[in-house]
Image (cartoon, rainbow over all chains, first blue to last red; front, side, top):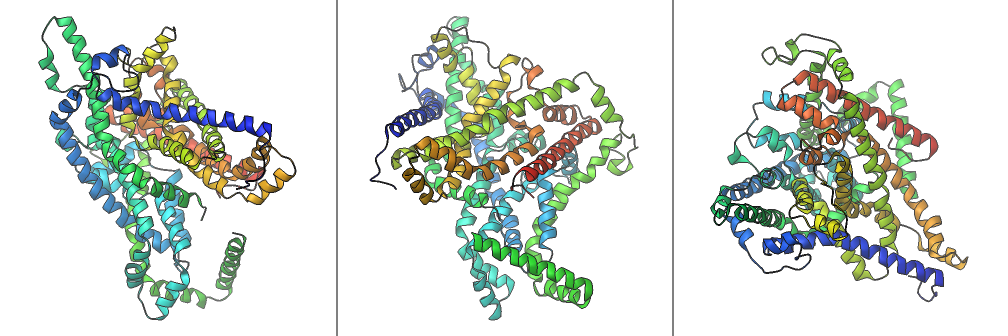
Length: 302
Length: 329
């Protein structure tokens, strides 16, 4: 826009500074990401000494080999995929119909339902009463403890409701009703086919949420065979419990072996970060547009 | 936009008119029931979500009463004996009360002071970029950390700041400074926490502001240019005022969770050595409640936390409503 108007000198200085500023911000965010990838395939000695600071040096895939041999990672992956798929399906089944009903102006009690839902955004029972409830319901150590307590989010219901209000013309619905279409038929035959964008956005938001969550698994699951990936990562990355295979490294003088072990452990950590984030890294560029769309729909006050 | 608002206000009028009618003509309420009956399927749609909120959100609220009782698992929530405000008093009088309050408030305010303005500045800067492809690249990359999980994020912080192999430690030493032990010293905990949070979420935070900026009428800028305004002046007098409503709403929402700070991340970053500056109310609730099974005491502390949050939210909203046109409700 506004071509043909010459920039003044001040504007040029401002623009240059702005480009420098944005470039710095860009580098600050990008550098750790690039470094992680490089560190995961570089010789751990180069990484530890700081010789590897941007591009991979002395490439090795030992970290990945060790990660892929780790049984915990595989079972964590399998569990997370299961929880994410089932959880997201439950989320959609709870969110979309409710949001549609709330988008209807002729729903008697709309304000009551909205108020009931919104109140939970600002006040809740807290950690212990929630835990006791789950225990009372007998869901401890079951997959459902990770899925049902977060079956719907008020925010996402509001976002979907805004979408239904904004994109599905009410004339269309009225016309269908005059022709004798029931609400069920209206929802499944007319509204749902028109709502694929919002369903996709919601599936993404909920899906990423399930993929990344660790806390409910930490408090509700005792059986490590049921642990999702994030909880396994917590053991490896945060609690720094390395897999038993690391002990095979103990040869040579004890000191250097110990040192070596620490370096390999660091290598494994970088590799495990990449492996666990890989699915999101792969799909991210394709889905970014939808994520952004979702945030925008939500930001329009309805 | 305006016509939409007008339509909404019309709807409002009709609604209030209806309500007034119900006062005078009772047979309208029968009509209401007919309406409910005609749309019974909509209640089937909303029922699962309604039940969900009732059970999993209002259910725990019923459990709050154990904050005023001595919870006994055998006798249940209802049957446990009342003790009044004992647990609250014990918490307020404990020696760690002020430490917890200070840490919680300090981390929140630090986060707010650094984390709130940065997305706004970034959005204003992105908005001035003229190379479309560069803009797209920068945005794609700065959004990306948002999708990294908390666990991985903390894992990255630990890896980068590890005294033996961390690249940031190498960098600090290369600059000739004795590197402090970032992860184990109380003095650095809050800074590491806040800055890593900014790294992760600043880019994502720009989305809403960029959306608001894209709605600015280009005519305003054209007129300003003709009047001789330079870029900085245009940003100050056109772009920033456009962002103010969005800023207020986000600020109010942030205030509501002031004492609820990123609990899951703090829990992961905590270790015995930085505890004195990393322990906040919510991590304390987790430890005393779920790890040490002091159910009633911990519920009382959690309730104290929620009540202050709700109070802050209402207060800030009230202040904002008095001083500007914008508010959450």
